[in-house]
Image: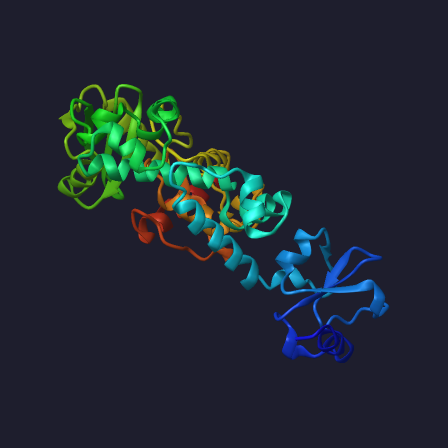
Length: 348
């Protein structure tokens, strides 16, 4: 399209061009859809951009009336390209300025838009992906040095600095599937089925709900296939009793020492979840807003699904808009029962 055609579409408020381009007004610093009902600016003050991404990258802000930034197709396409770029960074992790130059947007705009859609910054996303590649390489029986370089680390120092938080154990132990790591566990029957509580030397690493002892133990074993899983009913009795009391509604707080691995984003979500009061519920959007990421509801849902400690991190309190129950790692019926019991107990 020529500049004349762009301008004619704006003059005609032609809906066929919504999503094709936006126009920006230099004197106001605002950009709009072609169909915006606002008063037309003088032609000499108008410039055109193929999408909201480029307009915001040039320093314009969206019109509150026509909300041109709500058409997210172009924005999401850009962020998907950035994600693919960060999925395969080789041995050089690009800086924010390098990424911005590569994708022809401002660093500020890239940082803000990426975090709004993905839920974390480009650097946090890249670090997370690189860590996952290390885990994959280690599970494939690579040596630690091979895994570090295959994952894109330029050297071992940066990797070893974060290895403990990343893996929950030394790299060699992780490569061996948790070999030489002792995970103690116990199971007990509750009104919601079998409860499993497992602990490492540092604290509780898993709380599971299931239909049988075999099912919850197998789930634990899949996390650490070569760890020494040791039944320990005596030492873990107090913790499992606290969990059962919480399930039954006779205890409203569950303060347990936890030893769980998490990405930076997951940790923020889980910490926010633990502040949701007993007997109350929150939506995924509300939880996203609580952590300062109002558009990251989908990422928040993913963090809830990855919760390794049922009840201790109360992901059952998160519901859809309107209060509709969504999926729950340990079954929607268990989620419904927990919410009903909490509501009754809080009312009493």
